[in-house]
Length: 494
Image (cartoon, rainbow, N blue to C red):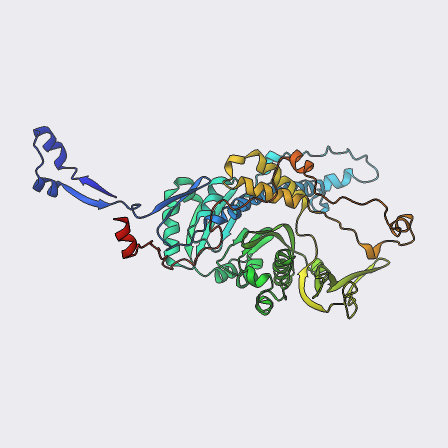
């Protein structure tokens, strides 16, 4: 696309004289200027829009679910954080500091005087200004995610869109400018290595978002230091072949855990990533609290809060487990790395006991493989998931991938928190005696879908488009394959 620009000074005079423009005059008066957006496609997602030119900057439409989920979790984090600050302020105002009592107040509070009880101060939520968030997107690429944060989430002070690629940073600056004043005031594009940047800004960001092309392993050590106390770390890893057990030795070198390939490989991938983040955080006397952890399409995405607590670090080993997997029937057992013991009022920490299995599988006689360690505590916070789901339903139009996101969170909300532990049950109970008898009634295990119909939500949606998955790395030329007719076909068509 091209546009014609008329020389501003000549146009009024010529129009007043009513002169006609000849071809030569037009060449003098008009200059052809290429539109700066001519070779670019404008991609719109949510309230943001970006310019996309070829494959110079990485963009994957399939990760719209990832971005929508991040916005939903971020909104819930802001609400939870504000409530926490409000509770801390109430607790602070309810305490009386003896050093702040004056001599007159001290005299009246002596036994000879009756102290006048003070009225408790009420803390108004509006009187406590919400602390605005600082967000770091460590691998910004086009900056779409950072721009959506600034435009769609309230309570954000600034978003740093960081990338190591100069082309990506320049594209990000153009996209920020394209989205107007609000994006310009909040989003700042910067060039640099994410690992060095996070180490130089220790504890300065309330939210750190890591969504690299491939593994997130090299960013974890600096990321757990960059997040403020009580902050939120959002992390994506797309190396599912490694995390799901196809290359267990590579998984051990990246995440410090050996992976299996099996029916539960996607959940194990999530738990391996959580275990790795916990291990890096423990080095700096910090711990993680997962609020939501999911496996979507071709990647895993976890949302964890980071807290500084040397005492809680001592319990970290009890939250990790090794996995024994049978080669035959694929049954598995967990062995805790450590355990917390209590004797009276004393609490002490010891190594985990085991192994929990014999030399052969009692079900099929198969051999065992041992993997891990993995995160063996809860991957989700039920309260968070419920809040996110409710907020999501209130603003359907805000999320382009609402249907898939709603299905995902609904499935997460239905996960059982406490499974039955047969080894812990009392076998002398009436129930155990009843279970030992052979049932006479033939059970019908056909699936009933009345509950799903009542809820009105699907559980697993098919992909909306073909080739809905990973994209080539930015900078690679995309070959366009054209259908060429042979000479014989051409003759027949003529």
